[in-house]
Amino acid sequence: MRHGFIKTAAGTPKIQVADCVYNAGEILKLIRQMETEGAKIMAFPELCITGYTCQDLFWQTLLLDSAKEQLVWLAGETSQVDALIIVGLPWEYNGKLYNVAAVLNRGKILGLVPKTNLPNYAEYYEARHFTPADPETHMVTIGEENVPFGTKLLFSCPQMPGMKVAVEICEDLWVPNPPSVGHALAGANVIVNLSAGDEITGKDTYRRELVKGQSARLICGYIYATAGEGESSTDLVFGGHNLICENGSILKEAKRFINETIYGDLDIRRLVTERRKMTTYPAADTTGYQEIAFALEKEETKLTRTFPRKPFVPSGKEEREKRCDEILTIQAMGLKKRLEHTHSQSAVIGISGGLDSTLALLVTARAFDFLGMPREKITAVTMPCFGTTDRTYRNACDLTEKLGATLREVDIREAVTIHFRDIGHDMENHDVTYENCQARERTQVIMDIANQTGGMVIGTGDLSELALGWATYNGDHMSMYAVNTSIPKTLVRHLVRYYADTCEDDRLSEILLDILDTPVSPELLPPKDGEIAQKTEDLVGPYELHDFFLYYMLRAGYEPDKIFRIAVQTFEGVYDREVILKWLKNFYRRFFMQQFKRSCLPDGPKVGTVAVSPRGDLRMSSDSCVRIWMDQVEKLS
Image (tube, rainbow, N blue to C red; front, side, top):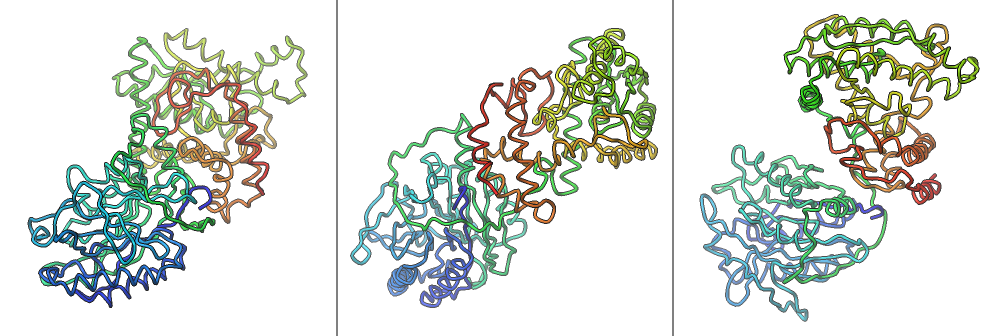
């Protein structure tokens, strides 16, 4: 459970209707399997001890007594099982019958949660047999124990600080005001739903979206265990469509009709962090709720959960293409508004033949199309200097021509050489001054050309560079509107690739593909044998690592050792532990040290859930100390 992860399971036993002894035995078999897999929260279907489809047999005292006996037997048989176990059965209380979830831990029955909303429409006739839950919590006697009976029960674990578990049953989720809403407002961040929904055409899609959406709305983990094969097929078929979701994402989904047990690692600490960050999420109000403690051994969860290597980039082709088009439109619409507001007659871009300036030019072309302005009013300025290669120069020129923009070339070698002379810098000293003089000269040139043409300078720098401070202060760091400011480098690549794949001009596509194949470089050092000598990722580290670190630091609120743990797992076979640790240290050092550059960023559109604008997502002092983060990083190995 280190780092806040806890393994959960949802299982569907193959039951026999009304055979409580058999069913309890099948449930126990699944508990043993779940225990072997390390599950700490185990969920089973609604009324699984008897079967959901007992119909009028629910009026038989013998069935009710057998169900109760088997619940007690299950509790005894699981006294050494290190887990919270939730099973369903009918329960008689005060002369009425209730559909309940029994919560077990280490041989004890901690509570009984009755169903609130009883469907009595279409194929459902639950009101014929059961009574809706009373809003009050009562006590019932089971053996020699007094057990709380009510809907307002929260189950917490001292060994897992922050985690609170609550239960609702099937239809409770499908109504306008589910009990889980109240549970979440009382502090529950794991909701377990014991269900027995039958399968009809298309219902699985609605169920999936319902569970996923509820987990997002409540910022919680949601474990949905439902009935499957073994239930009566007199009129209905049950599919065992189990789901485990977390804050709008499906961690695991069972295949229907095979009674599959699924496992999912919930990240409780992230859920707590998300709720804390969201100011519209109210503080927990436990009025009327009873909190019940349960025990788990504290141990490290063996993660089966996976993390995408490129968290900013959708994995599916269809979704990725849709997202790319949406992002390009957001960028272009932001620029369109700024050009309109400033009555700009042109846009000026420093074009290098690299990815970032390519994306900025593509976006600017789209913005001009939206405005109905001719693309000739876009001035793309190539400014060759000491590090420019033939390949990037040619691509910059060809790209500008194919997009219909105006190409302007300003060779800055002489101007930079004179500047070196003026400040007394040795041309053979290829230090940071040598590099930054070129970057600042380029910015001066395009700013002045923007003045000449009545336009504005379009910034090209991306989110990854801003996170690392990989920008020359008052050089490429500065512009009049920065269209790439919240686009991470890994996403820049996919946006350019999307444009290449969808444009109708084969030559334009060819140019874009060659740009994609060019090493990322600021080209500020002289080439070696005509090839790029300065590769950014050799200097600051692989951008796919830095984007991974950035996402889980800012979006998920993970601490360094948690990021390291999931990075080692995610990039196994790609980077070894030492390489990941090296660049993680570099990431934290640069992120904190370079905040001053982010504190004075130009305007630019936010397109995703992570951004570093001082006017938006990231309010951070430029003098924040990295010590406690680096202390944790230094302890890693």
